[in-house]
Image 1: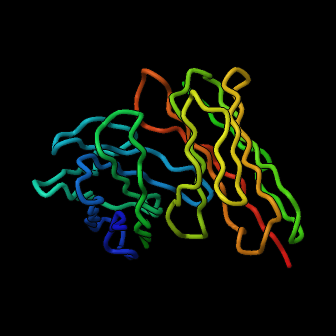
Image 2: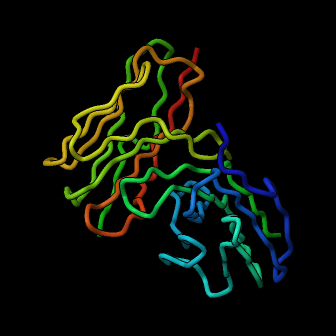
Length: 114
Length: 113
C-alpha cells in the first residue's frame, strides 16, 4: 500500500539559509499535518491543512510557512534557519479532518542546520 | 491541556521476556489512543489504535489496553525479540477538541540477545 512520501530525507543547511520540505500524502487523503521532533523530544504539531486550506496551527515559528497544493501535496518553507531548527520533520496524512480518521506518518526529513 | 506521560523512559531486557509499557494521560475524555514504534532517526509506525469505546486491541505479539477512567493505557509485548528494540510512543486525541494528537515522550526499549 502506498505510504506518505517526504523529500528530501536528509538536508543540511547553514544558518540563515532557507529550506523547503515536501510531503506527498497517501492517495485520496485530503489532510496533511506537519510535526517537528527535536532530539529526545516528542513530536510537536506545527500546522495542518484540509482541502488546501490551513485548518489548525500549532507551535510554528513565524519564519516558517506552509501550503497545500491542488494535488494535495504540501510544502513547508523554512527561512532564516537557526541551529535550533535542527530536527526531524514529519508529515502525516489522513482522509478527512476528524479525530476518527487515523493519521499515517511519513518517514521524516532530517534537517541539520550548521 | 492534555498531558501524556510514559513510564519507564528507558528499558533494557533480555530476549524472551514479556514487557509492559505504560502510558498515562490527564484528560480522560479522549477520542482514541494510538501506539507507535519509532526506530532511531526514522518515522513513526502505527502499531495499534484503540477507540474510546474499546478496552483493548491485539496485533500479533502486541496487546494494548485502555482504561479511560484511570487515564491509562498499557502496551504488552510478548516474548520480546531484539528486533523489537525501538522507541514506543503513545498519542491521544481529546474528544470534542482539537484532532491533533498529544504525544508522550516515549519509552526507549532495548532487547538484547
